[in-house]
Image (cartoon, helix red, strand yellow):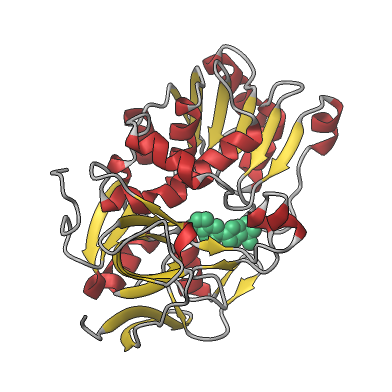
Length: 358
Ligand code: 572
Ligand code: ZN
């Protein structure tokens, strides 16, 4: 094995470097992975630009990357579920397994979870990376390494839909057509939503969403009137949405979610741009609109893999840009400019580990 473990390390805001680090030693329940594909998430760009994301602050140099897939190089003495050569998707958050949240199945809320590229934990945008074997999911031959990496954002979308209770026949409103809005739309469709309307401030993103299966779109501009938008949402959907999912985090879209949702429906907030927002709460409360937050995902990787492997969800078109590990800085710049949807970094040349033609 080559001992070169080239890694993309964020030292401080706007100081991302490619440097060699050591190849990690594995514990008995871990696997050593040769990394293959790593997508860039909005949070990666936040850390790179500001050294922070929400309440997480970069203090020490950190290896980036958490939307990833790799190939098993070596297994620990107690690993039973994987063997060298297996192609895997990596669920990036490994919880303590002992706290009340872990024991009751909501391990994503574990206060001691170690999540890739969330300070102080390193991510996997590097050549060699070690991970808990039971948080690696073997990919069937017909699922590409890129799709394996995309199970991460797809899991966020599935979790948002499950928190919203999306079910067959539901009418769903998705606010924001960035990567998370799009995977939420794909998940809602796969879960049986009968009509999905998606909004954004960029027409290019709405055009993309339409190609990916949105039934209706609305372009929101700074001159848009809130009451008119709510009316238009109801008109285009032919009904009030059963579930609204805000994938933008802006005050304006959170307000729309609360105002547009059907009485007795659910409004899911995937993330908030700022810690406090001014929203029309009284109306939502009086109409028994349930407001639910989400934090990443829990037990959704196997669902995401089934959806992709069965062909129920096609995430491939989300990848608009491809770069090598050596081109990481260029890739981050493209992601920062928001020029495409998903920027993918190929640690090994693309298709090295894809047995089928894709
Ligand atoms: O891919 C999931 C994911 N989740 C992230 C960050 C990056 N990628 N987080 C979950 C939400 N938090 S937060 O602090 N926030 C809304 C900013 O609750 C950030 C980390
Ligand atoms: Zn992410």
